[in-house]
Image 1 (cartoon, rainbow, N blue to C red):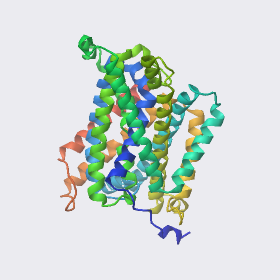
Image 2 (image 1 turned 90 degrees about the vertical axis):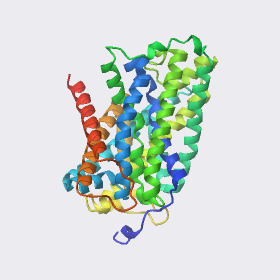
Image 3 (image 1 turned 30 degrees about the horizontal axis):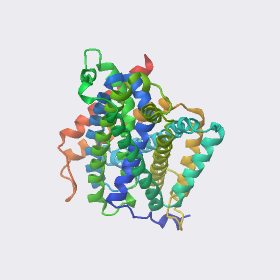
Image 4 (image 1 turned 60 degrees about the horizontal axis):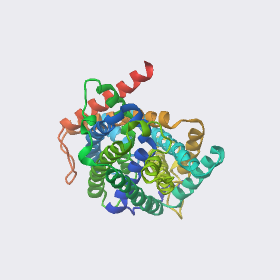
Length: 406
């Protein structure tokens, strides 16, 4: 076992492949699975929920961009907390929370996938879910470059599907006759928008996945920060345009609670069954689940390599150069969660877990910046920004928890 721990992960991800990796986990995770749930909460104001969520994510994304340059290692988030707050126990807890969030997120996506599959063909969940999780685990074991290429190709398809829906929705209405005032916030909008933002935040989870594969990125100090920021910018633009377009085309009542919302939109606008978009959505969701498996397994590997989890989890398979024990363990947990959980509950739990982790990561960077300048060549943000990120993330965690207890 000791000899196997000396095998390094394969450093094969450049800017383009890493960008597709980030877009794949972000776009596939939120829009295709959760549009109906979010519109059911915020109605016409769902685009505002996404804008608030993008602000929440943006503050932390900029902090992560600097932290990834300071500490370009696997299981980066736990390392950031350890270095910034000097608390190994808390760092281990953060690592476990990130692992859990990846597993819960992947389980939510697998659950979201079942709605699209069953809209096309009758397949029992007890058969479908294990088959999908097993297949994704095998791809993740195959290799990081191969996994990233699979994710990258699907990312292009899924973004193309969203652009198609935007264009189709906008062309189906007379834009000059649309009553745009329905999108105007009003006095009773704050709570629905904030509640929608907590769930919408799940759609932005993805940039932190990139820092967890830092040991597999080429020219990591330069590539990783700019890829994080470009990913967030592109996904935010796509989300807001899509929400506005589909709401104008079909209205919130049509979308709310739909199990395959974008396929339903396509079917309503074309008079067909929406089968093609259903297939695109299916692969988009599977793509997000694959990347969550990769992310969570790398955190398990990174913690084990630093002695914070049993050494067996740091085993790297010599041929594929992937952490096979960590990957199969994560996949087993995802399978269990997918069989017993529900989409919206799993997604909201993921959001709260990650907001808690992001709050600690922001606080860690604020502390680090108080001790002195970053190493030369590291991209930096003003010290006020991570403090603001800590406050914003903490507020939304408290808001979500108070909602659960009410």
